[in-house]
Length: 110
Image (cartoon, helix red, strand yellow):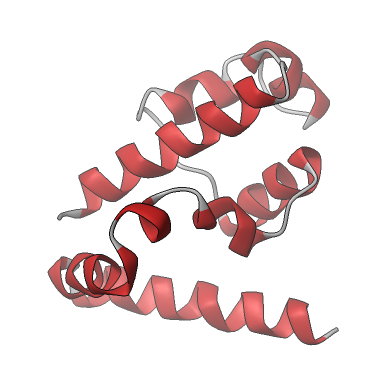
């Protein structure tokens, strides 16, 4: 699986979580202090949030970053699928993922 597939899984998960809470993409975008199309662009693969944006999205949805990913590939493929995805990423993409994991770890320890 390539980064584009990861982005699609991320977008699909965001859409599901948002719809589960019965929140419009426009409402969520504005509540996050963003352009009215912010969430729509993420869900349609036209944009990808920064790490700070991701944390704000999780906070808005009332979930932890780990919970965001729990319902996506973790339930349908387990760790093996995640390892395959990670291995298919470029070195730069892998470094970004590692950096995010370290940041999550710092937050969880606070």
